[in-house]
Image (cartoon, rainbow, N blue to C red; front, side, top):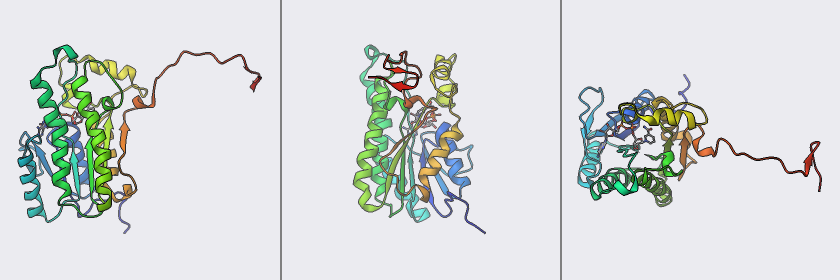
Length: 260
Ligand SMILES: NC(=O)c1ccc[n+]([C@@H]2O[C@H](COP(=O)([O-])OP(=O)(O)OC[C@H]3O[C@@H](n4cnc5c(N)ncnc54)[C@H](O)[C@@H]3O)[C@@H](O)[C@H]2O)c1
């Protein structure tokens, strides 16, 4: 029998932020492809089938100990998904406080740094590190200074870590979702982001978590072996550019010819 494409049989994966949304869908998808997945989340995964360790990714000691525990128990670490994040949107610069800035950077940026640092120590040639970026790390949107800065940092970290870990055969990439149907978005009462993002996204809808998880799956697989340092937009075309640009063709162009 032929091996299924993108199979992850025998691989051990850690997914942070695995109790909800994108992380949960990624964990399910990697398991479906044959990997053993261990979740790390602040919230216990008591309702989930997989082993989920209660870890606050902003705390280096917790990440270090949890990853060492995984390797001790499962013998290896092939895939590290640094996905846990908080999403403070709708906060203008004037309202930023030290507490907001510190917690957002601690979870979204420090958490990825600690995840990369302590996962890479246990990894061998062919291992994969995949971070969660965001379209807001590449495209400016108002009232998102802290969150979007944290995601821009994740996307730059992805490139730097890719360069440093390339000699060891470990690839580092990120998936940069557009607005996605997760509890973080859908559970905000009357969230205006849903209608706005639907209208502004070229594909005219939000992403489903499975569409985002599919990109993580590809990047986790052996088939992505020549990709590293890439921040992959999975955003319905948001990063492709402006949907409209009001212009007229110059007079030199007439009857299909360029007349100079
Ligand atoms: N939903 C979107 O539209 C969207 C778009 C682009 C990027 N993202 C990014 O995707 C990732 C997942 O977001 P989501 O929408 O699935 O959110 P979510 O709130 O549904 O899930 C996030 C999970 O991370 C966990 N978490 C939060 N802080 C943690 C910490 N300090 N330590 C460990 N776990 C922690 C939460 O408990 C939760 O289970 C985040 O990095 C987010 O910034 C989301």
